[in-house]
Picture 1: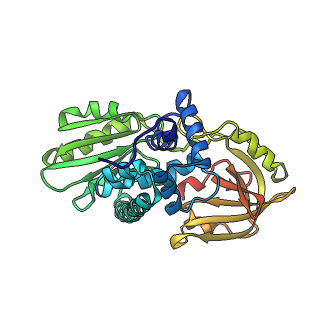
Picture 2: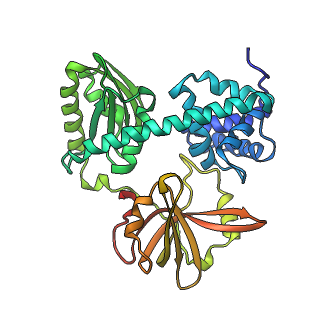
Picture 3: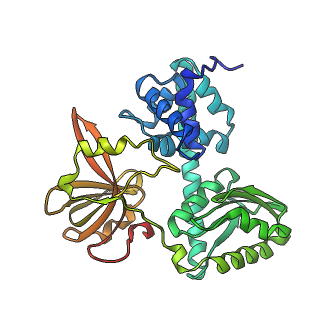
Length: 363
């Protein structure tokens, strides 16, 4: 038996977390549920969610982005690294005394999950570098790659190379894999085409799982590559960036952020509006975070200054010297610091000013 009993009204924080973590489209009743759950998370979260917020270091207003990229991965780490029941116990805890140790275990497992995923991605990138640049799909595996993080690794590779990606654990006679896709390439349709070579498979357009006998892997790889090559061309590998409006830095005010937030929560099915500012000059470039993996730019245009950040893009810093002018695409963020509202640009892409192609996504 688990401590506590589920009360629908009191459990909206956990319901919102599950809805976002399961990548459910945020429109209709789902959007209403997540909005109500975020209100509870910000006002009176349950013991389990409060403990999770604490270990994640989230003290400001909780958003759907926090659920997707900070709380969700910690909940999912339980099933990937140990036992999913640990996450259930946490969410059903009715006091911090029992919840805090469980949240810390999830925190530790998430750190382990991040390390394993990073190791797979490093090894996979070495294999990708050996592929033909014209390859339409990434198919690879290793016996040492843990099953629990294959999907995460595939997602990271899609983010890095923007190709449909199939990643396998190649231990034993049955090789289990996880796949992630890009816009316009339906994974299950692809797998149906290669079904005679598969032991089993399932999923949806953007994510799938599959199992192949080791003796059929080479044939499967050829089938996947042929299917992708016949349906994807150069344009398909350009990551789309949808911009809602142009803005000068002087236009970026807390009131604008408030108006944008009236459309929240943002996520699958309800994209966060992106803004474009042109001819921004780099004043200073910095990296921050563990291993200096994140990027911070201090920018100014003809009207005002702004601070911009891009997660996992620290490698771009040497290419962004002071004085360079950029067009930047971003989501507007607002943090409260010492009682004052501080606006920041969450960079989604950038390009040299007046150039036709956005470049940050490929760094």
